Structures are given as structure tokens and as C-alpha cells.
Length: 341
Image (cartoon, rainbow, N blue to C red):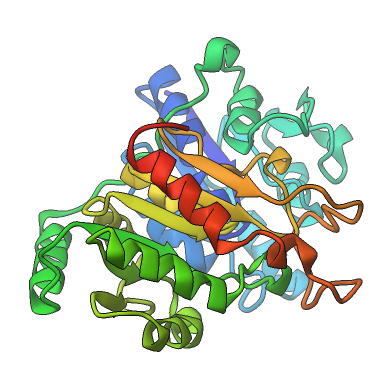
């Protein structure tokens, strides 16, 4: 029996994209116990995976911020006697955990901090999707698109019933579309006034629209709703991550910025259209399931301006968003709804 540890202390979207790797690890080592080190905001995701035995929380901005508490956490890991460690996360802190763990069979990327401490080093291929890169870390054969594996989230009957009640309580009885207009990076955020036009288009197509996101996205969702016709519900902040994924299963399509909700739609198994403003799909975080797609205005010398984004456009034009007109978005949605990608 193997005792395997996977270290993934990145953001919510990255956590979802780690699930296919965990699923295949469990297939490879069916009798194994696979634990995951993650941050508090992603605990729910890993707890909802059948492949995961135990979730270990590393609060790197709180409890484990100090070096003393970090080494106490590492001691707890060492005491669990893992036989293998895989670290798709490439930070110094993750590599430090690996280095101090005492585990011999360790797997990391060549772009990881202190990559030389890993026994097995995998090339981090920028041109590949993040799911593909993670699967390559465990030696999975990614040829012929075999890497396109759905992230599996287990949803309880209680959660399913809660979403049924949520829809009925808000009189959402017609076909549904979801729109996720928020993201923490301003230059990845498609303009709210453009999203309003997209929502109006969906209303005209007889969709009831759910504006989804976290509590922090409620303001932008609320700014979109008043400019839209009836049949729009601001759902931001109402539901947990797993509940949101269950809600998305009831939708026909999701339109999202280049942010975590894109990957929620993947886990829900629905059509996803990802809008790229300052970033590009070539970074490897696009939706890859059937009939999903992405859209981007790429005729710019300044794009991409960064892998994450900025608080404001570095050259003050924000052309990557402003020139991606709502008509281009709605035309793409039209194609996706009839199965053209």
C-alpha cells in the first residue's frame, strides 16, 4: 500500500484542474491512501473528490505564515510516512515541504523552485494545458488527447436537493444560462456594460440567466442585473463551490472570464465560453470539454501583458477587452448553442 501526498496550494481554479491527476493516481494505486495539502479556500474541492483520502490545510497567510509553524506543519507531514510526493505546485514553500519530508520518491517540475531536490523531474511544457501538465507529472500517456479528463466532483443528495429548492424558490423554471463576470484581476475582467448586452441577448433567446461568483463578485453582478431584462438572478455569494458546480449542471451554457468558474463549468460537464481579455488560452487554462470554446481579441502587440493580469491596463487603453465587442461574444454563443465550435 502506497501513502501518497499531493501538494497543491494554488488558487481555486488550479485545484479543480488537479482533480484529473488525482483520479488517475487513484487508478494507478487503487489500494493507496492519497492525501492533499491545500489552502483553506480549496479544501471543499478536494474533500469532494473520491480519489482523496485526507485533506491537510496549510494556511500560508495565517496559521502557517511563520517559519516556526511551517516547520511544525512539515513535521506533521513527516510523521505520516508517505512513500511518494507529487508537487504540481512549484513554489519555494512547496519544495521546502518536499525537501524536509524525508520521502525518497518525489516528483516535481523543472520550473519548480529548488527543482533539483526532486528525484523525478518533469519538463513543464508551457504549450500544454494545465491538466495535461499535471498528468505528465505522474507519467500519464497524454497522446491523442487522452488527457481531456473531466474533473469529478461528488455531490451529496442533500446538496442536490438544496439546488432544487434554490431554483424553485427563485422561480427559475425555464432553460438556464450562467454568466460569471468577476475575477480578482481587473485586466482579465470583461466590461460590465458588455456583459449586460450578453445577458440581454440570452434573455431574448429565452434563457433565464444566473449571475454567479463569490460574495466579492456580488457588486459587479448587481451592476449588470439592473440593465438587463427580467429573467436575471444574482446568485453570487449564495452558494459554495460544490453547490455552484451542481447549479451549473442545470445550465446549458456558462460564459466566464478567464477565471475559476471556467473550471467549475468543466466539472459540471456543460458548454463553457471563456472570454480572454489581457491573457490568452495558450497559457493552458482554457475549457477543453466537447462544444466548449474561448474567444479573444489578439490583434494587439501588447497582448498578453502578463500571465495573471493587473489592477489596470498598463498602457491605459484596455483594447484587449474594449475591442472584443458583445456582438463577437453573442455570435460565438450562437455557434456553441447549435454545436459548432
